[in-house]
Every structure is written in C-alpha cells, then in structure tokens.
Length: 347
Image (cartoon, rainbow, N blue to C red):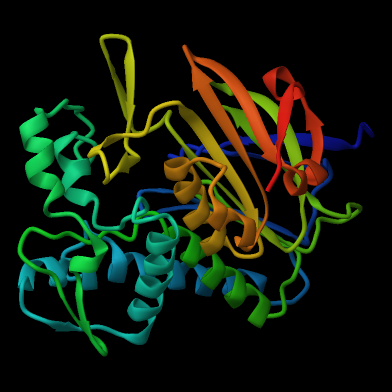
C-alpha cells in the first residue's frame, strides 16, 4: 500500500458488528468531513468527501432526520408513535403514511418467511431478558403463554388507524435503522453530496467512492473475535447489514442464547453466528439479514429477494462454517481465516 495512505479500522459497537475501513490520505484533506454522533442507542458515523460548500449543513440535516425517526419509532421513547400505540391499546391511533410504509415492509417479510420474521416478537424478547440485558431462561409454560401474544396478523389496520390488542407489542428494531440510513443518504444526495458513507450501528450505506478509489471497502468481522477481520467486500451505491449472535446475548451452562427469537418456537435461533446481506437499500439489507438468520439460506423466497448477495456464518461447537451466494462472492476483495473455505449457496 502506498505509504501516504493510512488504513483506518473503525470497530462498530453495534449488535450487527461490521467493520469499516478505507484508505485515506495522511495529509489534511479540506474536502473530508468525518463526524460521529450517538443516536438510536448506537454510534452514527458520517464520512463525506465534500462536493459542495454546505456539506456540514447537509450532515446536520441528515442527523436531524435520523433523530426524528428515533423519536417517532423507538419503542423506548415516551411519546413515540410506537409508545402511543402501546399506551392506548386496544384503542386505535392515527399514524402517518411513513408508519404505514414501514409496517407494509415488515408485513411483506413476515409473510415471505412464513411468519418467522415478526416485529411483534417483543414479549418473547422481554421474557428472555434481552431488553434489560440480564438474560433469563423462561419456563416452557411461560414461553407458550407469551407466544399467544405474538403475531403481526393480530395488528388491526383501518386505513391510517392502527390498534394493538392488549399484550401485543410492536418493535421496528429490525428495520428502522436501515430506513434511517436510507433517509439520511437521500438528504445528503438532495444537498449535492454523492461520495459518502453512513454507518448507523453497522447499518451501512456507501455512496459513490472516496478519492482515488472505485469503491468503498467494508470489512467483515469474525463473529467470535471482534478484533479480527475475515475479509472485505467492495460497495458502491449499496448497503450492507449484519445480524449476529454475539452482542445481545448471554451464555448459560456453555450454551449461547442470542436476542433473535423465532416466534414459532419462542426460543432464540441456534446454529447461526451471523448473516450479512448486501442490497440496494439499507432498509432491504436490514430486513433480510434478520429474515435469513431466522429461516436459513435455503428458502424459496430468497430466490426472488432483492439482494445483491448474502453470507451466512453457521456455527457448531463454536466452529464457523461460511456459506455465501455467488453475488456475495463477486463482492469479495479479500478473505482470510475460516472465510477462505466457504460453500456457494445455489439459489
């Protein structure tokens, strides 16, 4: 590598655990804006190679858009649309068109995955202790009881009026970060910026390319060693997201329990360490990374999924085995560790 370039490794502290790096000139670049913020319970990063005189204003506008979405769609924020639905249950609440759009996107994946991807799985997540990070193994009877509260089909919609039956919870956690990244990217582009990267807790959109490069390089974190990179992929005007079993999790009796719960069983998914998806939008990448984690890579619905490609890290006794699509393989720039030995998914 040319000595005048510096390799930047930025470890993401998110639940989906990607790693970004990009060569950057050691000299001070007046055209580079690199800013970090905290929102949506994670780190938000902007890297913009400026093309206009108002880049910083555009970044601030993008930040405000993300914070608006956090205020509206967080299940934790008092006064959010989601909180009002929970508070007013079972009464109907009028919601904006944007809410209906997000609900529709979630509903599509819900049906495509035979109801395994379910944004109402919150009560199960709660009894397993993942919302409070303490970890808990509930009794079978409690799991069976709470499962009866779960099901996106239980939500009642009448135009723009939504009501949740008592006990039903809604959580856009598997989609709103991706959607927020898309909205922020649109804001930057509307302001004349085209060469940038947005990273919201590992939900990444890479637009254009940095100077003297044809694409952005995104590294893939080893699911069992956060300091280790197993490879990198090239992105240009694409998004990447990962769902993993290594951030929101606990270990009991040498068993790992992660926060992604299959509503069919009421229990955390086992045997999958991570799923990484590449797509044209961050929302699509976000939704499908969770969906594939739940269903596995061999389902028929994935044959028509709007993805560039995806990678699945299976695990048995903490030994990783990688499977990936040919579309994902075409994006690989480097691979190392156990990723050097992978199987192509025929989809």
